[in-house]
Length: 312
View 1 (cartoon, rainbow, N blue to C red):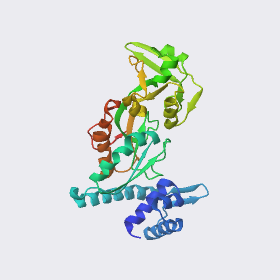
View 2: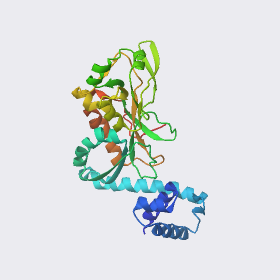
View 3: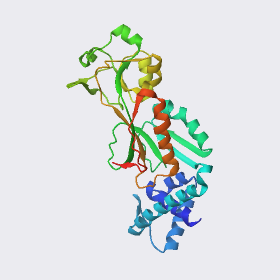
View 4: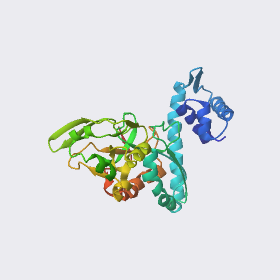
């Protein structure tokens, strides 16, 4: 194994915390990873990892090597891209993470044009409503919605999306249409556990009204919220992206338009401590320039023009 490959193996071991997880990232057997680390320590004549029943911990020398190895790998990848030149486009694999429904509605339909621009590039799209560990899963960039609770994340805000109260015309015909927040207590709500829960703050000019909505149906995934609303089970409070096709067709409609709810943010999130690759940067720029405008009034673009992501 060459020196750069050995560096990459060591970096994956430190990032994932185990030989087995690094082996899965590299798509090789665990013995091969163990052998590579042993050979690396022998060549350097220094112990890089402390092994115990609780896992692997880098030594002081291992931490220093880890930081320099990461930079060397990032710089080597960027050098490859620069040498290929813009004519050949981007190449290799790009791993992207997004929530299931958001990815289905607003990412997957637009990937074809991006792949056409870069015929040597492959995309591995991981759709999961959980905020997965980007390092352990080898993710280059994640598209995440809502507040970022981890202050250590490296992220760039891409857009805002308005939240609304919405339901089907059939539901409103049967149960009436609320005109102010106080009237929501008379309605059955489909509660999205990951989308804000039951407590909301409505604003109309200088007036504010906090509301606790109630409903017999709580759902942990956006797909379930969509299906419940479309089945006339109740109204819901949701970001417009979740019902963008139905809002456009009139299958659902937003009500109480003079009352404003807090927007939901869309972020591009990157593994902390890594250089953002050219292909990752190109994808984020594509999202900002092509994917977001294609949804019309659902999103308001807020991305900065800076090349580097913002560290929160």
